[in-house]
Length: 351
Ligand SMILES: Cc1ncc(COP(=O)(O)O)c(C=O)c1O
Image (cartoon, rainbow, N blue to C red; front, side, top):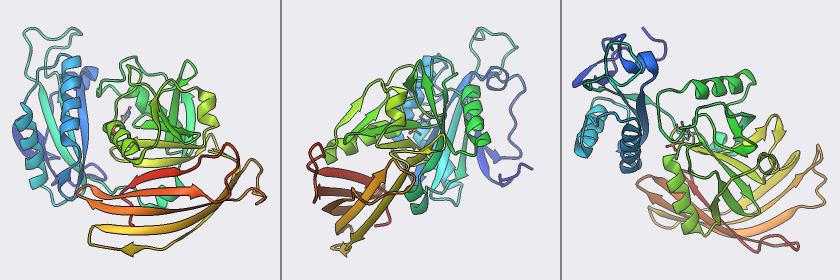
């Protein structure tokens, strides 16, 4: 029995659906011996796999990059996901898919002739981040990125990522922001975003990071909400002095980072208050006029000398993927250099 894994859960292994405690892989599987395989993690909301086509496109790219034969065509993968979901009672969950190069005599080069890939799939319970987690944010540490130079492949060789996550856990933090040659790369299982001067910045999509499926989503949301969005090399100093830092992944969705190496992001203390009126207009549309006031201070306690006040209106729209909220706000006591307006987009908010 594996703690935390119900033995009766059904998994898929090489053409069969089995109880997880009965599914067995050969000790000569190259995934076990060399970490020679790839995986995908697809979040499922109320029975609907989120951005499934994009996840399966990335799975195709990972297989092609490692020259592992594609075990299924697109409809075969969709069918497998559907069958896994049909066998679970969970409707908000994670689908995990893994393909390794297969079972062969232990030798580093690819087996010749090629062997049949090992295909594994399972569904795991998952609870999306709560409103409290979204409000509080996460603690992160900063560490050098010591992983290999093909981070764009979603490979099961995850030792560098595992050690980075453990370094965070050892420091009592939930996240970890990695830096290579002085520039931000990503978290061990998340992409990292930096807000500076009203712009959302992310690392360039090259071999140093995995292109998260939420990268495309965040770009779409920024375009729709008119938030300046840019992927460019980001210096460590720019991260540590950012207005905001966020992480995104299938399981974390989008969460703020509240502290890096124990220091609050955006200042040493802050004060924030808001007044919102929430009108439900139709079953899917709500309107939220609001006034926000707040200050961030570089001192240990805010001195309230620079409280900024803004007013705006939010539009909440229920989509098949969860509620989408778009807020537009203007400062009421704008100082020179402050933005003239702000537009914010959020997904999955309770209101
Ligand atoms: C290294 C790494 N970067 C980024 C991500 C975020 O990707 P996605 O948004 O597809 O979950 C992940 C997800 O597991 C990851 O492992």
